[in-house]
Length: 379
Image (cartoon, rainbow, N blue to C red; front, side, top):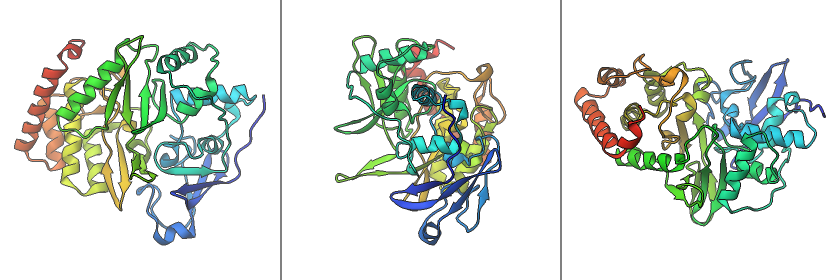
């Protein structure tokens, strides 16, 4: 197979503007520097590790393969990385011989959030497929390590996505959507389950994207959520800058190391809004009572819009487990069986009044028990 050397210099753009440049540094790291234009009237794309200031910043070798977390956010993970590797092999390129900058050049303009990268290495040559059942069948082939006749299309539709479950990103009449398909470990009704979880979260007052259950002749339906990193103002689609907690804190989501008290502190540092703390607290309560334990640092994100950081809508909400059956993000240090005492301890550290916190927790508990009882019986 062909060996692909490091991209010598990668340019980062936001909404057509030059943000800065990246280049390899030594063997396992990369360097980044903001452009003069961006320093003049831009913003920090990652406030803690890349403050808006002159000079070259060097990323650490770990945990993001020598990248800063904000750029690692742009790379596909799980399903998306699997598709990228398949496409590279199809073109005679050994995936193990590629470096992070080359992989960002594959992302180009297709990544989540608003950051774009040049030069672009184009792997896409798709046909248009609108049959979701057919796409789901092709995804199953990929997961079984079989060849797919529609690999180009699957890559084009889902090659920039993260997460373990197969997914595609489609532009429909009413906007841009992410549609998920079952993984090999999922029950057949996973789409319906995630749909009902999101409706329940909305009933709890949690900000969730628009969701749909897309019809299927083979299962209860495929779960779809409208992309919240895209804003359609009627004449144009604008991309919103997005950063995961993993990226902002420079911690890997693969290693449970986060507590909700830390997430609360991060939310306050970024937003300075008590309302945002309550949003996160409500989401924490939902994750605890609804047994959503895959609540790792990549499943919490922030959007930068009109000069302010805010929590993104909640996503990846469904019945789930993490390592050892515990929450990936602990609740006041407790991961296996968080109690009301633990929940209130998080609220206290965040400055949320106990009476208010108890009221939110009880409302969420009752709503979850009422609407998701058939799934909670799995616990």
